[in-house]
Structures are given as C-alpha cells and as structure tokens.
Image 1 (cartoon, rainbow, N blue to C red):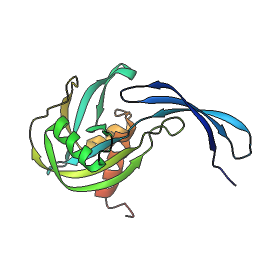
Image 2 (tube, helix red, strand yellow):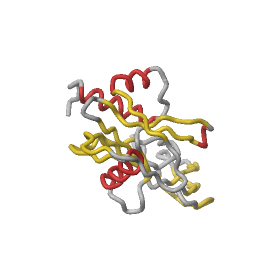
Image 3 (cartoon, rainbow, N blue to C red):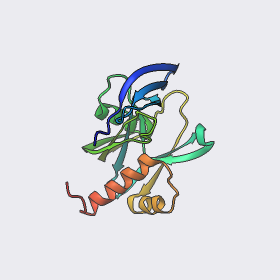
Image 4 (cartoon, helix red, strand yellow):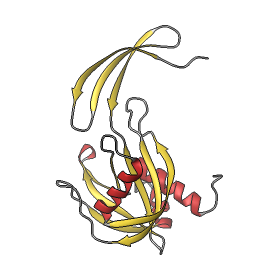
Length: 182
C-alpha cells in the first residue's frame, strides 16, 4: 500500500524568529485532496550528562505555553546549519556550566509528528568538568542534580512531563542496565 502524500502547494501564514506556520494542499495516496497544517522548526538537542556519582543535571525553567515551571534535561534549539553535537555541547556549557566526555548519540525524537517538523537529537555523555551556568540573555533557569534512579522514578510517576527528558532518561537507564541491543 502506498502511504505517501504529494505536496500540491505550500502557503506560509506566519514566519517567526523560531517557527514558521504553513498550510499545504496535498494529494493523498488514494488520489483525494486534503490539507496539512505544518509548523517548521529548526530542530533541537537534549543531553543526559552523567556525573561520576550517577547524577544528572536538570534545568528548571518557566515554560510559557504551559504557564508552569518544568524540570528538563539540558536542551536547546539548533542554529541554522549548526551540527547537533556542537549544539548539545554548547547547551550543556551554557545551561549547566559543564563539559562532557564519552559523547554518544542516543537517537532522535519527533515530538509531535502530526503537525510539527521538529527533530530533537538526543545525546548522552559523562561530565568531565563542572562549572557555573551562563544562560542566554532572557533565559532564567535553576540547575538541579538528580540521580538517574530517582529520575526514572520521576518519569514513571509523571513528575517529568517533558517528552525529550522522559525518552532520554529511559534510554540511558536501559543502556546503563545493559538492556540495549545496540
């Protein structure tokens, strides 16, 4: 069965600093027509950076769409043309003040594939050097360290609702438990 859809036209309704919104006319695999509302996003990165004593740095920050403080792993937006590994190293240094070693890719995440083209690149590393955070202008956050075991419990009890954080914590837990198939 052919599942692909053909783009007939793209119309931009908003072009912003971070996202663009467009509406596409498409032809479905059966020949019928439909529309797709798409948010274009440059993508992002997220890192689980483990200390020698098994703790992960988290950042707590106010997330305006939810009107609440959210606890997340360090993460950020890709700049145009930026390599994801360079971006995640930058974000770890800015948000936590740390440098990592033994970097490894942990896959990618499509946060909401029904309407958003964002791809979040997931990484893990071991913290090599700890320092002070230096967030971007207008970015206010608190750094908190939580053990990997406690972070898993927090995911399972819905205390960490952020999808990239949940995914990366569980992937790291599986890796550390020796339960990954490589």
